[in-house]
Length: 233
Image (cartoon, rainbow, N blue to C red; front, top):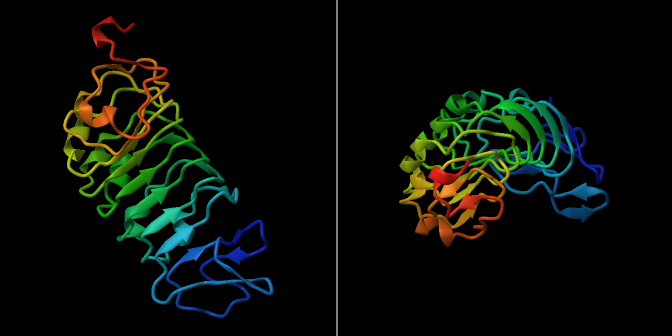
């Protein structure tokens, strides 16, 4: 059993030591306080959401420990002290998963694109503000419903994958500021993004597609967007 101790004193896990078994619909450390030191665990049915945000939980990403919760659709563990690499077992454990949020941790290694791409239901993948290396995996662009990708503030390298062209229909939010990405934005020529962040990528260059320029968050600071890539050192 993987148990999380939250700063307000509530121990939250899929088997609570003091609260009788209950058919939960959501699991998180931020349930409504109902007095007497108790917190509401709302809903009925299967557990679908694990949101444990900004509580500085430590250790590796607990995929194996959460694996019995096969009905999960959201895993949100941002704002912790998680270390190690991103696990590869999400698809085997959570066939309905829609969101993976591992942002603001201390994860290292490369992004296991092929393994994450096996989560065919995935819509949101957020790994910004870690210490991940390597490239943005092209395999992620094959996800049929992906609409939110966040890679910002990781020491990545390389260009945007050409496979991004496959996501023009569904991708609405793309963030990779301060991530070491270089080259142009041609692969986004047919996108209509609602949110886009790419500042502080010094070797990002070339024309800015219309569907990017008017997205919320667009800022060319710290890039060479607008400058022909042929003259960028």
